[in-house]
Image (tube, rainbow, N blue to C red):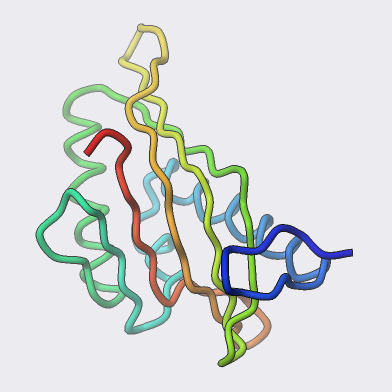
Length: 147
């Protein structure tokens, strides 16, 4: 069995797809738990994390971790908890053995003592590679809806 693939990328095997979904579930929990360094370790050493609302992408694990840490500090200062949800994942093989994924990401925000609300809705595109039996993000580009 195979799963939906992004345009121009052949679908991947069900086992790989399941591993990728598990990778995303673990990675997003690291982000939501405030574990910036461990989150950044899920990228290749030269990994890239870009967003259409930022002038330049973050490059490399250290820059990604530093950026995440700053964002997490702001949230803590404001008494906010954020939760990320990734879904509707499509995955396809790239010629170099990497996998290209496309997915939706929702970010929920809850103020201390308050009610959760949708903070952000996005689409994202990743290139994932396997190294030493584990998936890593080689590149991620997030596009914020409405921008």
